[in-house]
Image 1: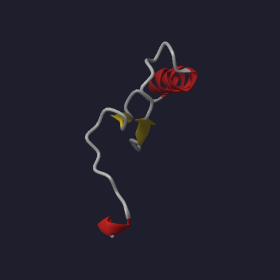
Image 2 (image 1 turned 120 degrees about the vertical axis):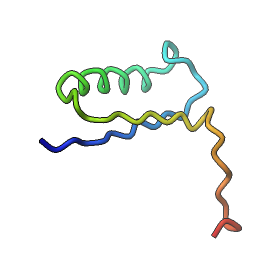
Image 3 (image 1 turned 135 degrees about the vertical axis):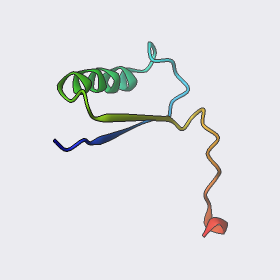
Length: 59
């Protein structure tokens, strides 16, 4: 059996109760976990993560 990884990237300051897109994504992830229990779900919240600014000087 091949194990997959799913990257779930969030980027909103709204709570899950306020964000419809996050609610839809969460419903998908929950269903996906049921169908694929051995797969790894990686969740990254770029709104709250300390992600450095990438601009022209970066390259």
